[in-house]
Length: 564
Ligand code: SIN
View 1 (cartoon, rainbow, N blue to C red):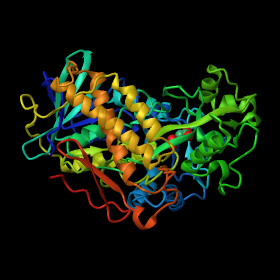
View 2 (view 1 turned 135 degrees about the horizontal axis):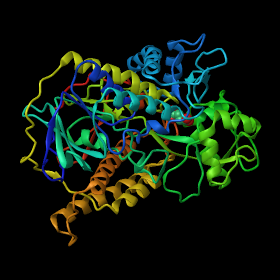
View 3 (view 1 turned 60 degrees about the horizontal axis):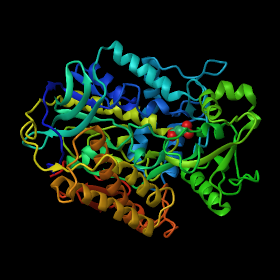
View 4 (view 1 turned 90 degrees about the horizontal axis):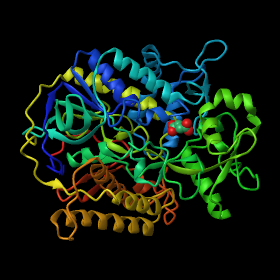
């Protein structure tokens, strides 16, 4: 246990539960529904509204071996290839074998997927898949449909939900076991300000951390809160260096910041071509799957072409789809492009890579257990070993579903008793000094320049230096040494503290991985180094919050053991 906490007021209210689920995407809501169905008193805490997380933005779909002739084994093969030698095979096997039934149960929960004329689930292709395997809904609105169905089920089951609530820290008992979370609720009903949900099982399903970069497909809520909380609680995180950059994000200008519109890989799955400014299809001859090569390969090829041509973007050409297909199959993307003055029916779409998905996260075993007893992680916040160095397209919704069910089963079986938090009200020592909210842009600039799609020892060293300076400034401000006033605790400051912590850990891992593998692209180390690199980098933070990196022996995860 590290005993590290964010600077925050002591909780002024508390409620009790058997399980608290933090996050309301596919992972969080599936866990909550299954826990409640098992008779566990379940509370869902979410940062904005129930449907405001990343799930709602997922376009392409959910991958599973559902089609005729497809098998979990083929899905496994494609996942392992995309993962560039770093997937944990046991985790992938779990995903692909349990996936099809998990999707069927999602359908029973009320999600409607697109179907063919004969009534079968319609399947499309995306990068890295050798066959049509991606189920989709509303054309390109899969996440929105899944979110609608799960939120509906949660409301119907009358689960206790707390919206507009930023989770702060893990509460632990005298033995270091999970005892709940502290959180800040923005002002409604019975819960207001900083409070606590006391529960012996906490499931982090807080999504990703795309907001560490200036431009990302992630919504504003994706500030790495779950990974930061887990690090402060002493948990191990892994594979954080593997940030997936989606190859085709609508280009809105080199300085465009915040959430950017995604142009799904499914557009390429249905036959769109990547071309440069001269109309040349540059993916031909680069990979047997051309535009449908795994995502890291396409993102690198686009970036290389941009660098060679001195261009700010490339183009995705799908004019040959025609208006009817665009309207029926990709209505969301069509509307987003048109709202920015681009008509994909008559012109190629300008695209460039942007930060999209954290392949790493809080390290778990196959039951979603982290190294802190009673703390689980599920979905993008977790690192189950499924994604390795590069997530296969549309495996993430599936991972959320499959591992949510496993976590709920584990909690229902263990049924731990509630214990008293030892770091609860009155024991808020060693608080983390809060950076000024304005620091957010400086973090994002440092990460974008130094740890973006193309990295080097020098760029990462520069990013590390800038981040460490921000870290030192926050401490100096807190002590009044810099002459600045200490930052007042609040949502902006807590989020920035989380962004800074996860950025520092990500950069530490990226510096340590001296090779190019999956979505970690080092221009100074262009080759994959299987002799040293087929290992996971596992990071914890020391009591002074310095990242401590160690390597696993093999690409398989060692068993999760409680932290000491
Ligand atoms: C997409 O639709 O291209 C995104 C799918 C994913 O990130 O898995």
